[in-house]
Image (cartoon, rainbow, N blue to C red; front, side, top):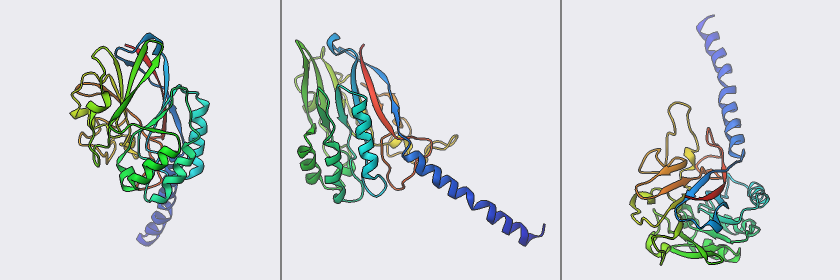
Length: 275
C-alpha cells in the first residue's frame, strides 16, 4: 500500500469513530438512571426511619436539555412516590428564556412533606430574580440560608438549605437554625465544596450536585474537568467531608456539550435510616 492509499484509507476509517462517539455521548446524556442509596442520618427519629427522598439536581433546561426530557424526569419522580422532594439547583443553562418553562414543568412535582429547592451558580447567571419568582409560582419552597422543621407527631427533622458557594453567601447557621446537637439535620447545598468549610457538627448529611459526576469520564484517566477545588473528591456518590457526610448527585442535564461519557444522568431516590 503506497502512502497516498494509506492516508485515504485511514481518513475513511477515522470518520465513523467521532460520529459513533458523539452519537453515544448524546444517547448517554438521556439515559437516566435512578440511584437508590440508603444513607444513615445521625439522630434521625424512628418515625422518620425509611424516609424516601427524591433529589434532583443540575437539570439545566436549555439548548441541550429539552423540555420533554424534563417532563419525563418529573413523571419518573412522581412514579417513585417519594415522601419528600429536594431540588439541588442548576435549573437552566444559557438564557433566562428557559426559566419559566423549566419551572412550569417542575410545578407538577408533589410530595407529602413538600418540595424544596436551593440555588446554584447557573441560576444566578440565568437571572436570579426570574428564577426565584418562577420557583415561587411553581409552589416550590426556596431554602436559601433558611430551614424548616418537618414533623411527625412529637418527632422532628431539620431540613435546611444554603446559598450557592460561587455566587451567593452560604450561611449554614441560618439554615440549621435552632437545631440542638441531638436533632437530625439534613442540609442541601448545590456545591459540595461547601462541606470543606462547614464546621457545624449538627449537620448529619448534606446533599449536593454541581460536579455532574465529571460529565465525561475516561476509563483510566478519569474526569478531565471537575468544577471543584478538591479534584475528584466530590465527583459523585457518598463522600466523607471534615464534619459531615455528603452525597453528590451526577445531575440530570449537561453543560458545554449535549453529551455524557461514563457518567449517566442521575435521579436520586435516597432512603434515610436511623444511624
